[in-house]
Amino acid sequence: MSITRPSLSALAALAVALAAASVLMIFFIAPEDADQGLSQKIFYVHVPIALTAYACFGLGAWKALRLLLTRGERYDLESYTGIHQGTIFGALTLVTGSIWAKASWGVWWTWSSNQLVLFLVLFLFYCAYFMLRFSIEPGPQRERISAVYALFGVALIPVSFFAIRLASDFIHPTVFTRAGPQMTGSMFAAFCTSWAAITLLAYVMYRTELAGKRTDVNLRELREALAR
Image (cartoon, rainbow, N blue to C red; front, side):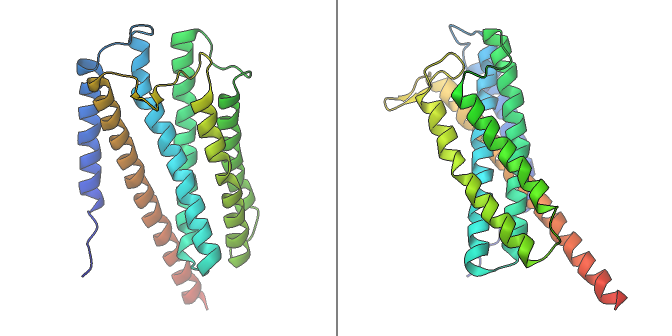
């Protein structure tokens, strides 16, 4: 028995509803941080965006592995789209992080922070993916080379994530510990709602872009067939 996936319009509407709920919870229910005040509110956006970027890069790497194992052509576009979404949310991570740092600590960036530099390296690595991909003619060779490159990058994800977890400087205070989230119940609820909204938004964007790219491929193949 096949399971029908929810329509994009329904998922988009749900993402908007979750986003609206998260905004209300962030500004009207979750209390202000005792140390950072109002500027801490960006935490509810910055961290979910970063986690979503990691997830998108991981999805791109997983689809790349599937391509190498099965030679399925569908996985090339799926890997490419996942990485493209990852770079979008990676850029948003850097922007929101810089805004938060400037508002709370008076600096936009510090090169002495290993976790900041590692995330920037991860982001630039996947930006270079597009330079590599579009320097090769379309075909099986480009698909395989792009897939191998995407797999190499996935090794940077746990390094970047655990660098933040292990950091003890002022840029990334540890909020989630073995004892649980270091925040009130209303703050944690706002965080989870925001995370769900951003993750669902990323999924809607992924499916929308993938559908568009598959349509482009089908039209290109049709034009080539008619030109013969």
